[in-house]
Length: 179
Image (cartoon, rainbow, N blue to C red; front, side):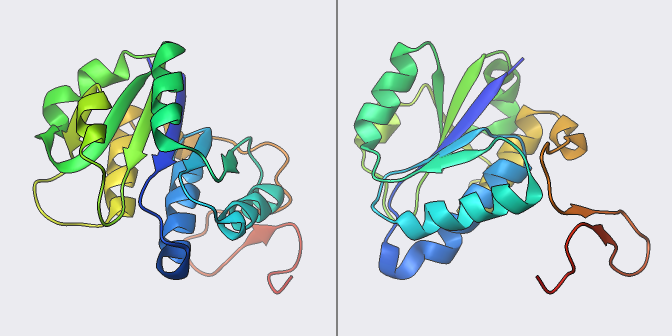
C-alpha cells in the first residue's frame, strides 16, 4: 500500500498558470499527497499553498525551482516509482492495482508540453482517460484511486479552520469566514 505520494508539476508558466498550478497543489494536499515539487520559479504558488496549510492544517509542503530530471532520478534512486499522467498512457484501471503496491509514488503532472524524456523515465505512463481534460481532474481521480477513497476521511492536524459537514448552509470552526 502506498505510504507516500508527491506531485511533480511540469510546464508551469508563471505568467499564465499560477491559479491552475496552485490548484494542482491544493488538490494534491486535499487528496492525500505529502508534497509538491514545482519545476519552475514561482514562489507565489508555494506561498499560496503554504498559507492554506497554515489555516487548514496538515503536513503538506511545496517547493519551487526544482530541476525536474534530477527530481525524478532522485526519487527513483530512493526506491520510489514515477507515475506520469498522460492521455497517451495505459488506462488507469489496468495499472492502478500495481501502482498501489508501491511505497512511494511521484505523480508527474504536466501543463501544455511535457518533455518526451519524461515518458521514458516514468515507471508508469497512465491515462485517466484518453480524452483531453484538466490536469487537476486527472490528478484528483488518480489520487482517489491510489488511496481507494481513504483520503476523503483524512484528518488535517493543526488546522485553524475546519468545515463542519452540513446538509444546508455553511458551518466552520475557527476564525470568522471573512478573515
